Length: 165
Length: 256
Image (cartoon, rainbow over all chains, first blue to last red; front, side, top):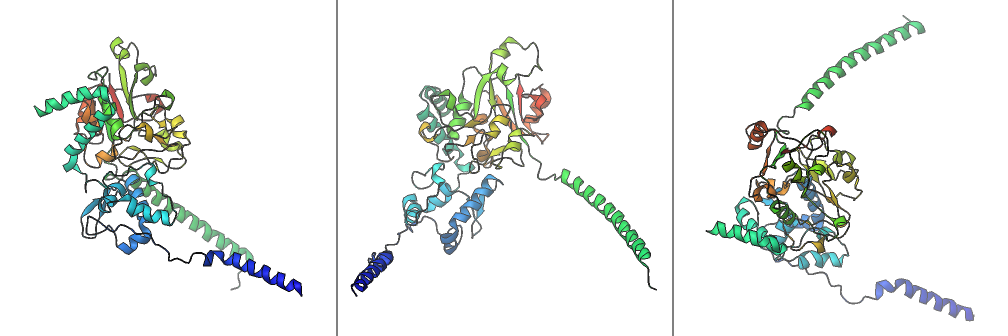
């Protein structure tokens, strides 16, 4: 008869241990708060699609830009944007930390985009860094050059002076 | 009415042979036509980007093209020459043109450091050996790298007869002073090389090195278009290419 108690106790402990993951978290789950703050008015695709398939879209973009050289995406309203995570997506969804990482860390996925692609400083760059921005790009490039190479700095400064005069 | 076995076999053999001959003719002509149409897609192959390097104008000691290229494309600068990454660089004449197809070259030419970069060959050996298709030839003749697909096997590096490819032995990020955010960096274990500024061409700009050169040493253009500046230069000047005996058909030409 005494064995019954032991068996029951053992069973109860076993059941408790097995069901531990189900009853231990009693508090309400906190879902990630994604920054919905955006600059633009429309996304490159419907929100529902983007929520589920943004990674697929980015992969399609990547392949079409690198392999086929097709660099522009036609928006629903017919306008063109560059197929670029850093220049287009993050230009509108301003914060990478809040827009990308909040969710990614919650679901524990680690995309390796940022091993190579550079996080934009202010979230994103100009909307379509095309020929209109050529001069601005050039200036940025020159500044970059100056910062990276001091001995060269003098010659470039000289060049610049010549241009201004 | 009842055919015997012999007759039946004869008839069917005749039928099969007839069908064989007819289908043979059909396939011959159809594939023949297909081949002809394959050779001339005309519209798609209307561009072949190329470059002429006029070494007579290149100033000894000027490295502006190299600097601007390496800043634009976030090329790291490592202290150890073993780790060196280069997209465009200067090298001795003897190293750039080791073939003995030019004799009695002037002392001045031989002393000059020659600009070298990826030749964007018409028949690139690196593309043939790449096991993942990371290196591929674009329709416009540019030999492009898809860094996403590179597994770092370095077959392309041994296949390239010009040493145009560099391998990231170390994480390049710390070795890049000031990162240009418009262009991605690479990661450890990836091969890289000159891409003829395909990202700038897409915006209608010239390659950075061409734009930056103060002496107009570099001329860039479409080799398939007879009216371009580059074709004019090629017509008016004797030019040489690197290691022509290998049959890679480089798109980079030199005036010595």
